[in-house]
Image 1 (cartoon, rainbow, N blue to C red):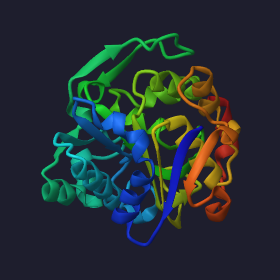
Image 2 (image 1 turned 180 degrees about the horizontal axis):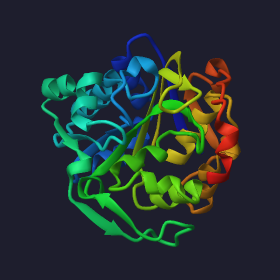
Image 3 (image 1 turned 45 degrees about the horizontal axis):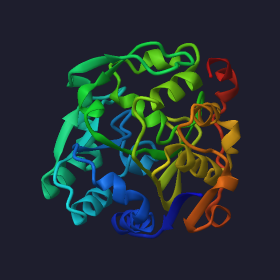
Length: 284
């Protein structure tokens, strides 16, 4: 059985460490990797995490604290913002202070060297230019728990779009297939969903929902499936999760997932979709 942990608490740093500790036996092999560890948050814009749109720096700090406790030295926090200056987004969220406190390097992936990659057995994405830092690192995806008008949810798999040279091109045509294809080349080794203050409705201007949750696991498809279920969305209603499972990248079947810590039912809340969702479904 695949294991996913849900931790709830008032202190996001410690809640994150707790959630990661719960899956420690799954993380052991990941921590043995000799590559740098790239923590990839979601800073689609420079809004403060209290809006529910961007990743809480305290969840990032909890992830860094966990890694340092397990003797991981080379840690990078990297993102390529879609609608803002990445370094300004880091500053707004307080990530620059976290990096300074822990001696972690900050990288604007938008200014990285890009390498063209051919996804294996693509459904739709034939070629894509990916930040070299992401390709050469062990990936830790730290997205926000929120809905998305086109993709239904935007969690650890979709979060990897920030490592691309062109984010907008992913939204044209078949987004769900593109996300599944991207996951075959940028598959997070650890997923840490920030559900401290989540967001319902629009992915860049939604309504904040206080949840005080952190969801972790080493199967990103399973973690996203649990995250979707927590928001009242059936995992099989998320096309890119179904496609990623078919590509052998993980499972979105809740019956095959052991949930540690809080149960889905005990924290579940029905998130309301954006009023414009129905206008955009043909892009999925």
